Image 1 (tube, rainbow, N blue to C red):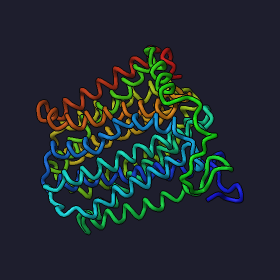
Image 2: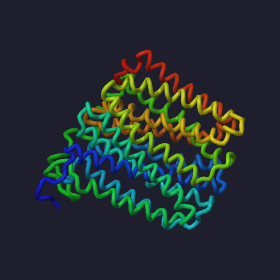
Image 3: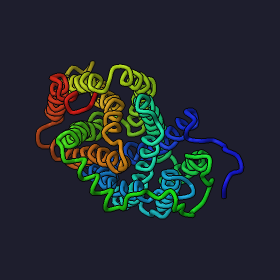
Image 4: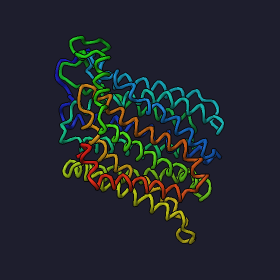
Length: 427
């Protein structure tokens, strides 16, 4: 089906930001459900830190494999609906179908957690495809000097969605159960699908079509595309940037996840109250904070923004570790939530400065694939950190884990301060 008039186009800034904000908001909503509300809910029912960590790692596993979608999106973009938009719509539809499997889960106790994790494993695979296509659409259509603002918009959408998902489903899960929560998640997902359906990449694109458009097929074969991609990794710049991406999310997850279990099981916090606290903290920093950091990054350059935010991440994690050591009853009650807030806020803002550097390093024919590799490195850090967090915290204690995470961020900040980030092309 083809529109007779131009209609909404991704080239218009307002429509462009509406689409990417809406898509990331729904991605955040699912994350708030799967990675905050569900873990807290099952922790309240007695799940161990290791079991909760296994769930988070399972949900995150497809995001490690996200680069596999990159060559598909980059090479096979010759559809009448548009180079990237076809994949956005198709992948989001498939992810909603995967989520519908939650309606068939029979056991809502702790014993049923692996089944729920398996559902989100499949859903995350299609969500990763949606994300890859959306990122490609951003790289294709946003001027380089506006990437900071564009990534701030994606962050605002994701954080707002995460906050809503955490708060809404923390209330719905104990009150109405998994099935009712899944229905709400699916209904909002259908609404999110409307934006990429009506906003096209080009005026000549079909509104809805499965037809290929051979004239738009990429000039390179898949083999040539992969060969060019491999050549782009021959230098050390990309590899070091990949390592930075991994280290930041690994250090954060290693401390943050066992801290939430600690708060619920040993420090007297209810799962719903903690989810609301996490949602409120993320919402405040992820809206005004993200927009401010995005504007500042465009103005000052990525290298300076990264160095300062990495240093603040180091300070926040060391401060969080110190709070956990407080024994005075007047402070102990709030020490845990404050530590969680400190270890959550700054890494979220750090991403707003890191993403433009990654997008600039991803420019070229294989843009979606390159960017997906960087995002996979971030996600791998989060998954590995989550999977190891229960065992590491049990072995050495949470304060020491927080101190180690702060030291890792401090080392990265020092490297940036010495000019390594600028030499690696991050400015």
